[in-house]
Image 1 (spheres, rainbow over the protein chains, first blue to last red):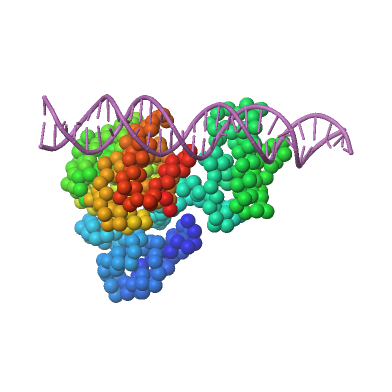
Image 2 (image 1 turned 90 degrees about the vertical axis):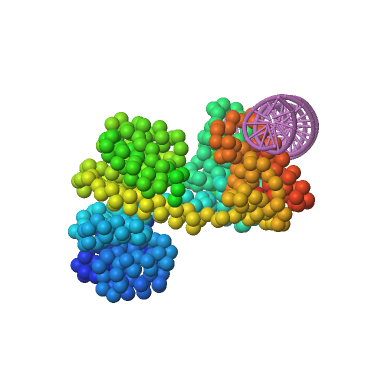
Length: 230
Length: 230
DNA sequence: CTTCAGCTTAATCCTTTCTTAAGAATTGCC
DNA sequence: GGCAATTCTTAAGAAAGGATTAAGCTGAAG
């Protein structure tokens, strides 16, 4: 989480607005106060928001109407913060599209925790969709697609070669001993007098060199093992 | 929403469990009660769940531990339902991965509304990401209708062949290992020396080739698996 | 009960990759 | 520079993975 998570705080009471904004900022997010329903609308149209904190009793436009408007512009989580303590209003808001409902007076720690909880969920969903790749200089490795590209050019590797490069790129600074490599990739004990890793290394290097001549990616650390060249 | 939305209700008090289950069922979902933390674990391992209602004070295994376990097995929303009214416990649970926290005694309408709210959100996310049909080059697969067309011509596939193609087309760049495929489609562990997948692949390829001669859609990645040919 | 489509198993052939081994090359140290 | 230890390269045989075909099995439909 970071400063470019934008939260719109819709609340007409000056003190409460300030309080909510400070909670948001202490959480590490960016807060934008809006003091009326109509002001909120302007912000909603201006940019996408990661979350909306919404008071229900607003001048200009009611919270319910703002809520409908939010749902038109994307699908950020909406937390209602309201003085309306009655159950029916709470239930109506939740059924009307809100993701959470907190009644005033609120506990600022709870508000903070609920904000984090909703954002964490959004992140979880976003991350599960995002492809994971490793990059090092002009090399890009995609573990899902099992592809390696150098300067955008695909390089065709065998399973073992790919595994070796994958391991190296997952920990760019670490030096891997032969027994490290062997045991990680082959899953069996490494018995000293084995030349297998060397050969695969050699093949891997020559394939990389053929793709981009004159550049070296894998470094031999004499007497210890291999690592990515910084 | 329908009967195949499965909600796990983890609550040791018999009366409350019954009450929660009836709320769930009145919402149109399937409820599965679990009366201890350890029982919950069994259900969690058995199948994926769309939501978990979780009491914090449980025999066998605490709610917090169950919560951690839930997060290992996918990412369904978790609503804590607890008699612990103290703010610190509430905040700890929310920070610990829970998506919502309701204190006993609860209003059943509110519980119902919060369940719906969380499920609505999950649906919203799922629908925005999932296409109704998959296309790749001149191949079109419709998961609903269970049909495949190449250049508009229908191709008749068996259930397994369809499932394989479906999986491949859902992640066009991903390489699927045989064990990936086997475990996704057959739902049981893959034990190395099996060439069932090979045979289905072969049949699938020959059917596709018969439909559009001279074109290849499925690529073998040696020693790793299969993927759609880019 | 029979039939049939589809799934699985088995046997065979073919392809690619892995490993082994031996000589060449490099590095670090005296 | 010379020597020993380590690493690199090469090539060929061994091994593993994959494709294809055919035959047996199974469960659902008629």
